[in-house]
Image 1 (tube, rainbow, N blue to C red):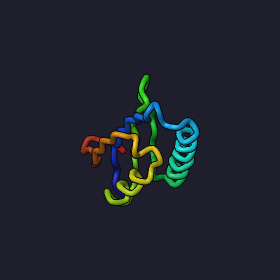
Image 2: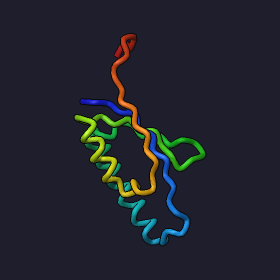
Image 3: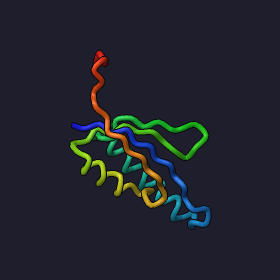
Image 4: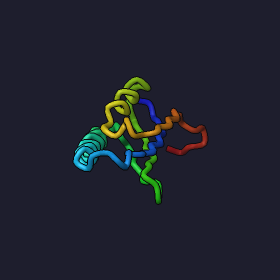
Length: 93
């Protein structure tokens, strides 16, 4: 497994049809929650005061993460920053 720290900043256009906005957010929630149940989206934190999050993904490869991110319903409205992680030599876990 490979761990990735991912920051996602969302910027939905203000003129997007409200029905499309709601439907996209609903699909995003369902997709992200299924990935959490599968253990692939290991952690999800909101950044206070922003429409942004910090997440930890536990996936088989960078290719798998790429597919997950590209399939996010909100992906067209996101700026995404990915940092691969590895174990720290001083970690006791």
